Image (cartoon, rainbow, N blue to C red; front, side, top):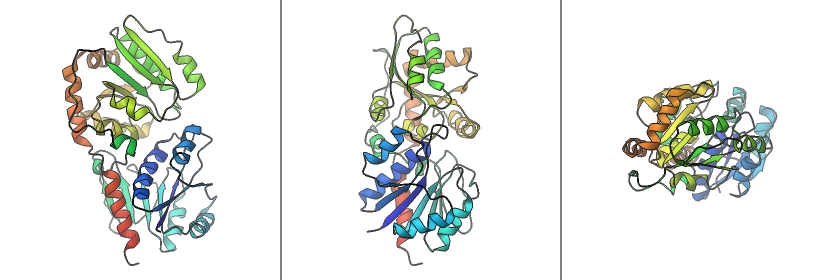
Length: 337
């Protein structure tokens, strides 16, 4: 059996985006009879750990240095390594490639020194130009979990004004910058009816969210992180989230989305997504004002506007990115060295 390793981490400050897209690729590899082994520091984030344990994906502590990584690769009999990290020193990927094993690096624009046989940049309008490596760039290679892909509608959803809009607001598995309470208050300021489910990543956030007072016709349901999030999204009329890896899941579902950017590395993806009309922009977290309230009010009250966003979003991501990336990786693994 072919065995592939995945070197990625998660944590309260780094978030879970790297892990989520690696889990998506792992799911696809497993369906093809490939063994997958994670080498990860998950920062004690229970939700992150559950993503591996509930799927039966073996999880090992991350090696300290490149010597330890090569030793782990050999001990686990890995035939290839996937790397998804902003902080892993480039000498780690160099050392693994010297053993003759191919490396696939998942990147976001900046390679951050990583060297690889295959680069994957799933971001909108991304371009990869490397003479001695294969570059897979753009939304055709968006890495989406099966729980999302299976809920993709067969056609773009059409919205109507016959019910109170259902909203889902979420900001990753950790919400390190405490976006959820700010968005909850912003929603209440619209002054229009809605039914919102808001994910509070920890007890402190949930306590703050429960102090937000909704107006007439408004409802705020505060819940902990849940594996049922894709189902909640599929049943929603509007999502509010940070611009990041989860954006491509929203597009695949054809779900109208209002996006904020939280950290600097989200700006480019945010700008491109809004410019292409795949989502509505609220601005920078911590600087959301009357214009942001007006944008939310428009989306909550204008079903036609939501339908148009849904149409553009649905057409942007077909959900088959994991298949294309798995094809490329396994072709490289099985080719003569």
